[in-house]
Image 1 (cartoon, helix red, strand yellow):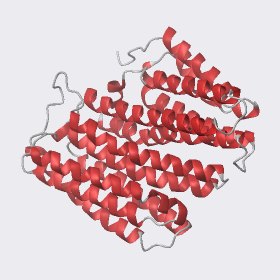
Image 2: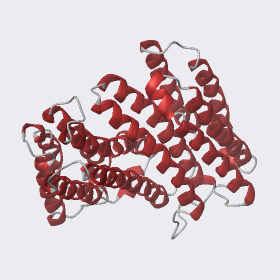
Image 3: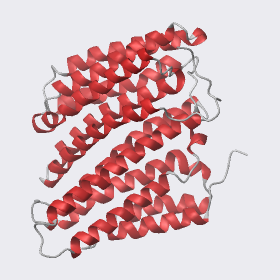
Length: 376
């Protein structure tokens, strides 16, 4: 398991990586569905915090595998087997998400998470045998990951509520410090085009989840409404918004955003907000439908915020990490202003209307103003 060449031409995602991503579709779908239920019931604090916690586990496990694979992927039988074990851990974690939302019981999610992380420890230890000058970095990864898993076992002993939330934040920050601890002297060789393609593929997963969940909710609602006009309106607007988010995300050359270790950390970590917001967008659309069917306690204004806030977070996140340094002054004005205007949508009676108009306007500006290379 030798370090991969970061300048290898035509490096693309492997079929194993694409297969690996499929299990995350399951986890993201379940987390989004539980968030929808909590928001529709008006349980905002518990719903958002539970969603943030389980989505962190999903995102962090995916991201760790992705950065390891870009540096040490061998695609031999042992590497494949270890990856499949990690996939099993994701499915176990996903199975425990409802209990985490309903009862604050994170036992099953933690078990699934530890399965994934133990498999990752095995990968790093195997890589250390042929890593050469990167051996110390690979071993620090293995030691750091192993140490934090002890913390997650202790996490199960902490009472639910605020003590558990505080402990989670602390332990999550310790998890996120492992790459800094492992690579502060010498960095593993990431492939910029490969790694950003992987992030792009996961973005497609969460956007696709928004379309799927919204479509299912609209189909279910069609049997309970006398008029199809509201459903058609929401369907069209959902497609327009999702397509706009796709267009905006893939506008900049992402590989320019990870030219240094510090920049790669900013890019990787900020994507937690981007991914979580994209997946939460579908929950917001479902909440809007619940209000339309009188199956939610929320007002129409409050329900609209469950759509606009995730979209605004998505726009600001991708602008900060990828668009800002590849855009001219006009684009760098339109993006944050557009995110703020999206938040005006709840004052209108038509769900997502202002959001769709604003996003289309942003896309038009991006089409007219192609990316610029501000590094020269």
